[in-house]
Length: 158
Image (tube, rainbow, N blue to C red; front, side, top):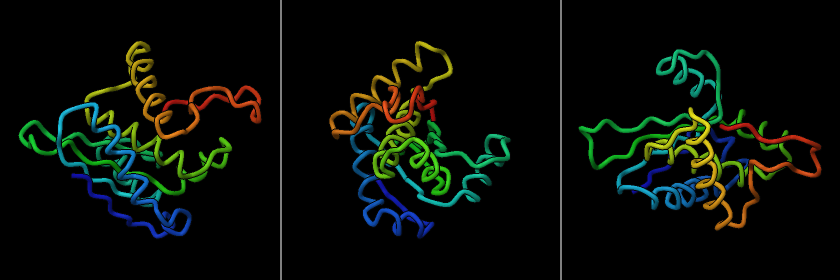
């Protein structure tokens, strides 16, 4: 089960179907691993900044945070929080639709819930290949490739 809570109305103002987009992307990524419940919070920068400070000791907003469920909660995969302002600015700066960026970040977050990470280069390459494959199945461009309209810009890992 995937539950999406839209806490910041900016998400639905910019993307009226933001909850459905997030749910679809989470379902696609979750199919790669074990079954479990996922909660997605579409919120604002301040809420994500507060979570980042509280749980990661980083006093800044970021695009997406993933919180894997403890092993004592086997029916849950975990929670994901996304900051509207950061995500919207990244999408604008990268010249891509916000809906596509939301899909990518939700997939990225769910992969973290499934145990994937990008600390080591080999792990990052594997995780990015999964993201690319899932996004391609949704007809979304590779978020890691160079874009001809942006010179040599390459999106950095979320």
